[in-house]
View 1 (tube, rainbow, N blue to C red):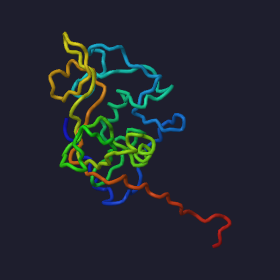
View 2: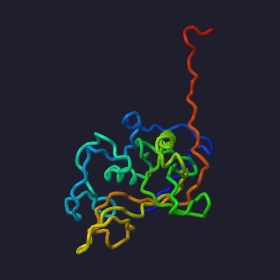
View 3: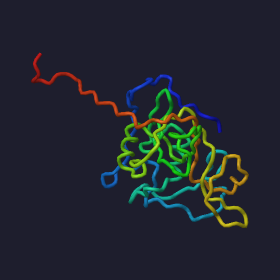
View 4: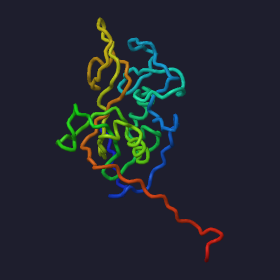
Length: 230
């Protein structure tokens, strides 16, 4: 797939700027549930090799299609394959609310758990990071950092100028072999045997921030009340 530029020439050079509207997610026991997550009311299909009736995603990869509705109890560590595909394929939608992600002149906002198994762009000259997590709007990034334990302790705050979908994660059903979970690049010959569950994006030349930009303060100015002096 082609590389997508996420730079916004009309965004302010510094400062948070105006927030673009992103819908609020539903809540479970007072905690916001990101749109990308699966629920107990949704069920995966029985494991099976790719079928002609499967939904096609990018590059013709067959995609896992779940039944049911998003209700019950959220599965906090499980991405719903259909919603992950929709959000990640756009490359500009917030994983929590589904609306526009935060964008500046430096790029689009990503908030990722720090992974000790991968080079840390804060201390190395890493030019690209792979992730299955879509970007975030600024308001929901602050919420995620408060509510998600993996983000509250140590996380990467990135502004990303370019992104490309480069791989798919899912179950590979090679003939004569046991099914296995793998990540395959889009040019891998075994993609024809995969039932996909997650798109993987490559975040290129990320700008690493020390912390999330602050949320804009609400504008409290307005017409004087009836009792105000004139």
